[in-house]
Each structure stands twice: as C-alpha cells, then as structure tokens.
Image 1: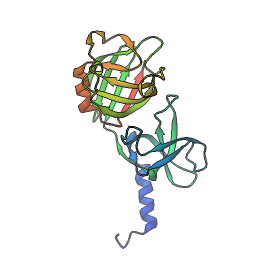
Image 2: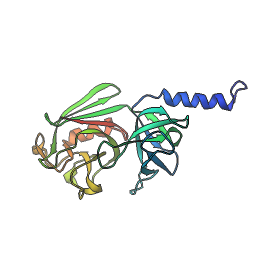
Image 3: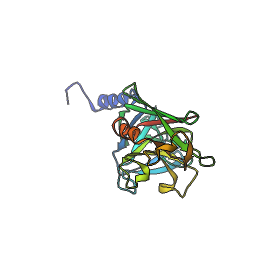
Image 4: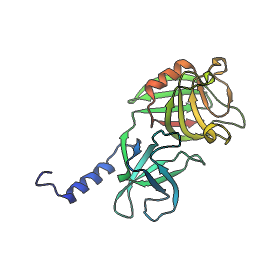
Length: 222
C-alpha cells in the first residue's frame, strides 16, 4: 500500500467506486449467503435470503439497478429479485457482491410479438417471437437472464435463456420460470400460444447464445 494511502482513504475509495458504478450491473455473491432487505438498513425487514449457489448448483446471478448509502453509512445495492411476485426488489450490502456493468439488453414487445437485442449499445437483432396464450400471458416487467443452457428437449430448440420472470403457472418447471428459447415449431412464431415463455426461431436462439450473457437485463413491454 502506498505510504499516502491509509485504510480510511482506501475504504473511502472503495465506497466511491461503488457509488460511481454503471447500472444496471450484474455479478455474483462473494459470500455463501446474504440477507436481502426491504430498505438499505441492516435492521430492515428481510425479503429473502439468497445463497451463492442455486438448488441446481449454478451460481446465483445478481442484477443491481442502483446504489445508495445505507443507514449504516455503507454502500448498498438495489437488486432485482428472481421470485414471486414479479417486480420484487430488495437491498444488499455492496460488500457481499462483485458486479460488472451489463453489456446487453433484451426487449420483448408483446403487442408486435418481436424481440430486439442490443449489444454494447448497438442494435444487433430484431426478430419475431411467440408469446404466452390468453390466461398464460408472458409477464410484463423488468427481468434478467439467470442462466443459459442447451435444452435436452427438442421442443425448446437449440438454445435457451432462463429468466428471472415467473408465469401464471406455478406447476411449470422451476415453479413457473419464464424462458426465452428456440422452438421445434417455427410455424407458430408470431402467435400467442406458449405457457408464458418467449419462443424464438432456432436462428435467433443461436444469436442469443452470442449476444445475451448471464445477467443481461430484459424488458418485456406491451
């Protein structure tokens, strides 16, 4: 440590770095588990406990939308929570996560049944999709990519993104987790036929493999 740098000034620099972070930002927990609270206050109501690894042994991805100094004088992050109800947010101490600015964004338009993908600020993809059928509508809101995988079921196409959104069907895999995935029935693209997932062509799914890393923010709009 340089002679001019004291533990106090180093701590101040770390706080400044957190406050100046570019949002949204994604990353992972640095601790085995952490408490998510309603406000940036160590004594605020607990919303959820997040663990470093999910039940499927994948790392739990975190999407932070903003930062604020908490009642303890330390920086906290407001994070988007993968849980019901959709649109739940909470706060975690900045020290328990490691974040990086996101580089991509996915926008799904229900009315036009299209998807747009932006990568490093450039519009890279526009394509047609299938959305949830009446009564099983694809949920509106701000979500993110939790995981990426090659499906075992050909019905899901060549590649799939697991999102933080939940459908109306709790009995659907993962408790109703909404996916963005390829399809073995491309003739149904452009229609409202799914259980809440966003279906894309296999060509689009392959593009998402390149353009949508874990942590990518997703906007589902009308």
